[in-house]
Structures are given as structure tokens and as C-alpha cells.
Length: 435
Image (cartoon, rainbow, N blue to C red; front, side, top):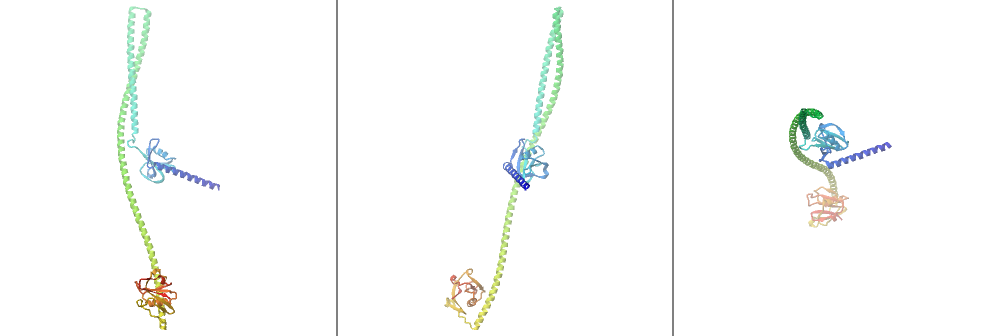
């Protein structure tokens, strides 16, 4: 039982976590869907919610990232990546070599890599140009230092030569005049010192000359490097121009693609409108079919009812025929039937007695058939006397209505109740009311 509760708790936590991730993804899509976002690295990505790439464009196996921005950084680190799909449900990140071939996926956010016009692959050229300029400046500084050292060495050599010449003149004067020996020795010592300095100066001059030669050689190499650098700069400028031309072509292709997409969207809308009209026609057709089916069922029901009425009519006709035969038999046996006066000859209100039943004749009356308490209807063709005799022989007949004014002249309508209070004046019909 405890394990069951633990399992239910884990399932609940998982459901809450999934709901939280879904809410975060929904909030992200509400703020960034179809929008550009610049990463800390400077790369730009367009967020497209509910989309992912296609299988032929997959780049390697999917990785695992906690956020959509981390997935975009993975794509930015791969030069072949043109877009990435981040599945917020599984925290998976799949890279793609195409950012335009997309398909629907509910849990995915596609991150399309965007490159600004005119900046494609130009950074490397600008970097080489800066390095060449820096190298040229360093070589120029070294050349200036070599020239200064050469000038200083030549000046020092000339100064030491002048001092040596002056010492030699003094030594000659000293030797000619047989001057003071100590003075001469001191001057000789000074001459030796100056000679050593001259030798050191000559050595330094030779060393400086070697350095100057090396500096000139380095300057020549620097000039060669400078020419190479200028050539690289020229090549880089050409590549930059080609890059800008390519970017312009890409911009034109993008505009054409956008125009094609707009045209396709219009065609899609027309197709959807046509589909909607077709669906409406289909619904109307289904409604007509349903209505036709109802009418067919009603027709079948009416046919069944008509068949039943025909059967009832046949039954009533047989009964009426039987009653008529009985009436004729009674007449033959001597049962007296009174004379019926015409309505215009004092027949209205006449009381006639048939057997043991008496009826009052009402002339020129009318009554709607659907309001009658009908017992049964006898087929047209009877006389009013025959109609009254049928009611007199039917113990359940309380009154009778005889039709003389419509297309069913001679129809005898037997009633279950006395209809005297419901009669109206106006037609040529006749009613027989019990007395």
C-alpha cells in the first residue's frame, strides 16, 4: 500500500513538473514567437514555436539542454548548423543543416540561425588586415631605431678620430721639444688610453655596422611582409566585396522567397475557402438527404395510414351494406318509414321516427370535419333517408351529418355525440339530431 502511495506521489510530481515545463514553454512562445533574440555570444536566432526540422537535414545525434537558449548556443558553436529544435518536454536539442525546411511538432521550438547582410565571413578578413597593420608599425619602429643607432655610432667614431689626431699632434710636439719626460709619459699614457678607446670605438662601429646590416635585412624582410600584407588586404577587400555581393543576392532571394511564401499563403487561403464552401455544400446535401429520409418515412407512414383507412372504409361499407340489407328486410316485413320532406318544403325541424328512434331534421348547416366526434364514415352515394336509417340501426350513433355541399356529396358521417350545439348555419348540409 505504501509503495502504491509512493508511486502515485511520483506520478503527481511528474505531472506537476510537466505542467510547469508546458507553462514555461507557453510563456516563452507568447513573448518570442517569430521574434529575433541576440545571444551573449552575439549570434542571433529566430524563435518559431510548434515547428521542428526534417529528418534528412539532421546534424548528428540530439543533445540535452535545459533551455532553448542553451540549444541555440550549441547551434552557434557549429558552423554547419543553420537551426536547432528544442523539445521542452524531453529537454532535447537536435541540430539541423537547414533552417527553412520545417514540419509541425507540438512540443518543439525551432531556433533559426540568422546572419546579418554584409557581415558573412568578413570578420576573418578584417582580423588579418589589423594584424598586417600592426606588423607594419612594429617593423617601422625597428627600422627607425636602427637608423638612430647608426647615426650615433658614426658621430662617436668621428669624435674619437678627432681626439686621436689631437693626441698624435701633442705627442709629436712633445718629442720634438724634448719636454718634460713625466709630461711626455703622461701624454703617452693618455695616448694609449685614447688608442684603446679608439679600438673599442672601432669594435663598436663594426658591431653597429653588423647590427645595421641585420636591421637593413630585417627592414627588407619587413618590406616583403608589408607587400604580402598589402596583397592580403587587397585580396581581403576583394573577398569583402564578393561577400557583400553574395549578401545582396541572398537578400534578393529572401525577398523572392517571402513573395513566394505570401503567394502560397494566398493560394492556401483560397483552397481553405473552397474547402469550406465544399463542406457547406456537403452539409446542405446531408441535410437534404436527412429531410428526404424523413419525408420518405412520413410517406410510408401516410401510406400505412391510408391502407388502414381503406381497410376501415371497406369494413364500414360492408357494415353499411349489411345494415342497408337489414333495413330493406325490415321494410319488406312491414316496418314503416316516414316520408322525409325537402328543406324548402317545410323539412327544416321535421321530426321523423325510424323504428323506436326519433330524429329532428336540421337543414342548411355546416361543421368542420376535424371538429366532429366521428364514429365512422359511410362512403358517398347514399340518400339522406338511407343515412338517417343507418344511424337509427346503429345503437352507438347519437347523431348523423349528411354532406350535400362539397365534393363528397352523399357521405354519411355517424357521430358518437349529439352535435346540435356545434352546428353552424350557412351550407346546404343536413344533420339529424336525436329527440
